[in-house]
Amino acid sequence: MTDTAANSAQDRIKNTVTSNEIVLYMKGTPDFPQCGFSSTVVQIFDYLGAKYETVNVLDDPDIRQGIKDFNNWPTIPQIFVKGEFVGGCDIVREMFETGELKTLLSDNKISIS
Image 1 (tube, rainbow, N blue to C red):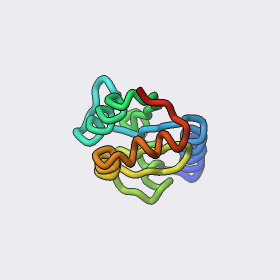
Image 2 (image 1 turned 90 degrees about the vertical axis):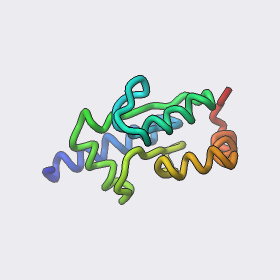
Image 3 (image 1 turned 120 degrees about the vertical axis):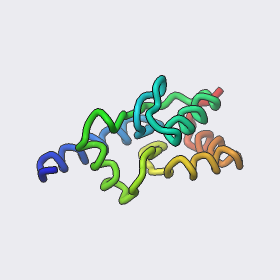
Image 4 (image 1 turned 180 degrees about the horizontal axis):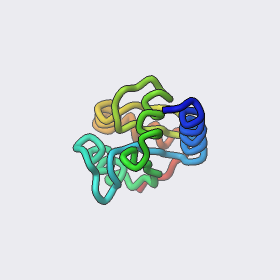
């Protein structure tokens, strides 16, 4: 990845995570996840009835690498709430199971059903 592509990817990532309440960087789409971890996170947010933006990292190699560099987090999916990095699948699943995720969304005034 060139410096220009890296900067562009970083700018696009920053814009996406700050412009949406919940962002899920995933492999595939909510209707057709391309990995089990991405599928799990989609199921959690769908179960909660939360609206979320997704970015399919398989569509853009610069974003796929850029999101890993953005947080110094090596795996995908990656979840952001109100511009803050929350974690990956295991963290979000654990937060969901303990009720922490629902509290995080509520504390950030994100409506869920």
